[in-house]
Image 1: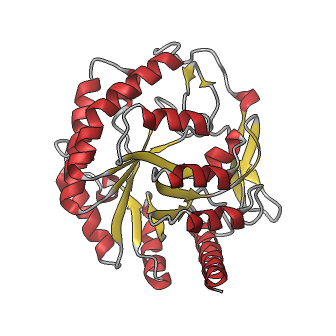
Image 2: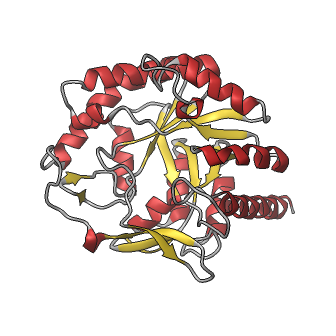
Length: 327
């Protein structure tokens, strides 16, 4: 198992030094890290990916997982530009292959992406986290897209995978599909489909392949009410668990908030041990950490101090389990 750090915002330049000092060797990032070259350069192109990779290499980091694919909503929605978006995604896979980037984390949440109703919920002690309250979210259409229904999302996902999986196989890139976050049935008239472990299985079964699998986002599966160790075992034993977000929540799908890794509702020891039991050798990274005192963040959930705490927690747990399994 490989610990990774996320590099998504300018403040994360500090985390490059922290990763180097802690011995973290794997970067989870995307071409936006390279900045803007010109209007003629895109996030699926080779040069911004190369620049990002070289930036990570300076700190002894390997660009291992590309996360943050922001240009495939046309494919999700099935618009007239869907084939152009898919072509760009396939170009991304080709360029990842050239640079030795083995895994891409993508989602099937059009329009809203990951969504919260509150971004400054205080935990005891004053750290702040995100919160989702389903009662505050409108169900009726609030964009010019109107109602976008479940059947269309499934149809478009199958179409996407049939086009993309052959390229993933050709370039040997793992497609790590992220579950919906939050895993509710609809937000603002836009339905969601990846809201259970069974739905995730159905998604990767649309086009069976050794390179078609999932991101094990523990917080999303916890909000679904799934048993986290069981889900890890299920997808791990199928060899379809490619990447992991190690995080936790408190609450239910109706209302939940993010938590520190040691204060949430999941048995994190059992979760971590499950990765060892299935022989997981991919990248695992802390995610959606609380914002702590003196943290400066561009987006709630990605503070430096919370990330450092989570990394130490993960490292300590890994060491304890490794020693236990050797005894």
